[in-house]
Image (cartoon, rainbow, N blue to C red; front, side, top):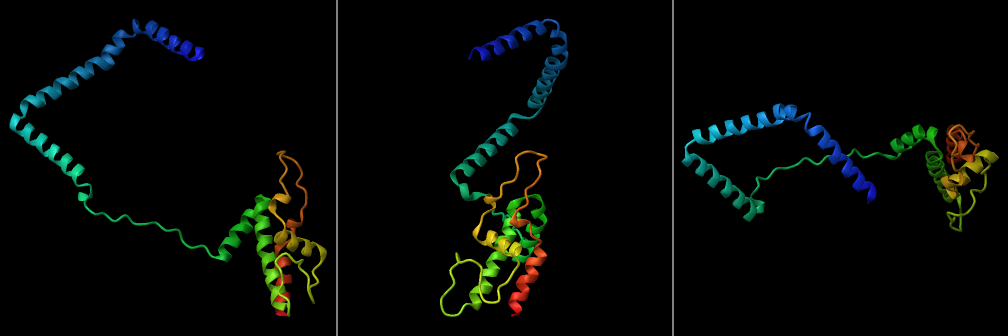
Length: 195
């Protein structure tokens, strides 16, 4: 509160100190052009007949009354609705692949999608008992290497929050199971579908 009062007092003192030396500049830059503008407007007002001014005022008031009494009186205009093009699964996966270089979240999204595909492959192979989503990814003829298995498991059952990015700007990134080569994972899943 005191700081605000000091700022206002400083502005008043500064404007008072500048008022006397700048009075001729303010007179030439502001007062004279405004007086000239009002003089021209007065000439226009007196040059036009009073009947025309009354007609203009009556038309303006009528327009305002009609707009306020009949709000739906506006002419109908159709605004085109801009729709975003639908992005398919392949396009979204491609966008995630580009963004995966910058952070763990998109790497996890890709791993999650591939982990769900692995779960569906194993669910189709299952005979008898229905496969739970929380079961480990294992089954007959399912023999990925340990890094690939860890990638699919962390994508399906893990979270991107399990692998936080370092806070320091130049810190070395820790290698995570999400750093697996996606091409190897896709090739393994393709080989499992062919069986």
